[in-house]
Image 1: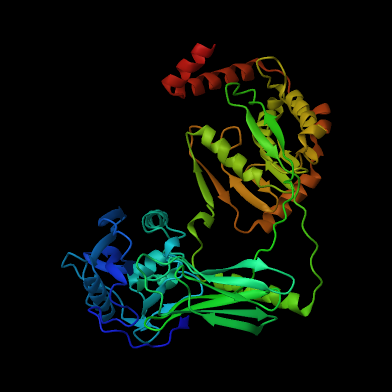
Image 2: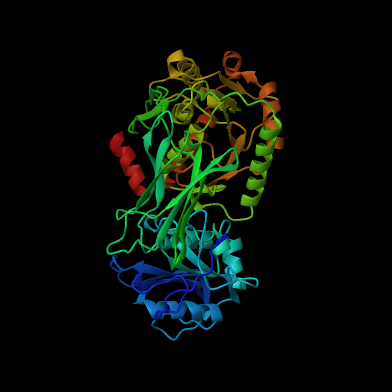
Length: 561
C-alpha cells in the first residue's frame, strides 16, 4: 500500500487531513452486519464521500434470514461531518447503526496506514464502482481474531448450503463477493474519490520517428480549481527510470510532454499541494496495434430426440476444433522464475475462498425434472476435450443419442462399458428393432466423419459385473446413482464428483480393456429360452409399475395410445 506525504490542510469543519472545504457534499454509510442472538456483528462498513457534482442516492435497507442468522445491509446518506464522525466512532469501537441505537460489535480496529491520512492502492478495491477510478482510502483493519460467527461464515461459505446461499445474497446486494476478499471482512474504509478530476490516465496523441507526445490527465469535475494540481509523467525502460516531465494541467485537465524516443512504458502521478497524492499508476505500456484473425469455424451437429421420447426437442451442438497450444518457450532462467512466481501466486490464492461463480458443485441432486437433468449432464459432457466414458449396465442407443452428442470439440472419443442382462437382448421398440440392432446402428452413425467424433468404442463386460454408474470426462469422474435412461425422473438420485479419481480411473480402464467389443458380443449373444411363466411375470411387473405411476402420467400414456 503506497503512503501519501502528510500535508497540512486548510482548517475545515471536517478536520480530516486531505479534505478541503467544498470537495464533498455528503457521506454515504454502507453497513453490512450479521445478527446472531440479538448481537450485531460487523461484516463490512464503508463511508463513501460524494463529490459535490453528484446527487446522493436514496437510503435503503435490506435483510434476509439464513438459518438462525440474519444478514442486514444498510445505506444511509449523512451530512459530511456526521459521516466522518460515524467512521471515527467505528474506529473507537463505539459505533451504532445509523439512525438506530443498536450497537455494532466488532473486534479492535486500527488504521492502516498508521496515521490519519489517505493512500491510493495500486488497484481499486473490489467494492469500488468504476466511476471512482483509483480512490483515496483510509482503512480500519481488525487487530484481533474475528468473532466466532464471522469466522464461521467465512470458513463455511464454500461447504454449508445455507452459507453458500447467504454468500450469494450478499454478493447481489453489495456488488462484490465479500467472503472471497476476506482481507476486507470485519473492516471499515473511508473512500474519498478524486474531488478534482473524474478520471486520470495517459495516452499517445502524436507519434513520429523522433519521439512521441504523451498526454496525461482527465476530465475536471464541475467548478473544480486545478491550480493546485501537478502532473508527472515518467518513462520506465528495462526496469530503470528514463525521461521525466512535470507540469500543471490546463483548464481541460491535461498536460502534454514529448519523449525523445518511442515510449516503452509510462507511469504517472497526480499531486495536489493541499490534498496530497490523488492518483498514480504503475508502469504500463500502450496498445499500439490490434491483430485480428478469423475465429475457428464451428460446425453444427443436430441430435434428433431419442426414440423413447420422440416429442423432445432437437438439440444442436456447435462442434469446435481442438485448440492449438503454442509451443512452450525455452526453459531459460527468467521463464523458470516466472513459473515459480505463478505457482506462489496460486498458493497464495488458496488462502482465500474462491469467487462464487468458480465454486464447483461436487454433488447434484436430481429428481422429477428429466429435461433439466439431461441439460445438466450434457453441459458436463460439452467440456470434454479428449474422451467420454459411460459406465452403465443398461446403456442403450437412446442414451448415446441424448448425451454423447453433446461433445463440443472435434475428435472426442466416445467409449461405453455396459453389462446387459441376457433378457435385455429380447427387448424391442414399437417398430420391432431389437436393443442390439439399435445400438449397432447408433455406433455406425456416430462413426460418420461428418459427426466429427473420435474413436467410438462400446464394449460389454462379461468377466466383471457392473453395478454402479460412472461418467468419465477426460480425467474427471462423476458417480451416478441411476442409469442414464432413468436419472432425473421420479426417484431421488445423486451425481457426485469423485474427489480422488486416480484409483477409479485405473479400475475402469482395466475393466474396459478386458471387455469385448459390442459387435462381437451381439453376434455371440446369449439368448435365454422363452418361458411362458417368465413372460407372464414380466407383464405383471410392468402392470404394477404402471399402476404405481401418477394418474396424470397414466392418462397421458392412454391418450398417446
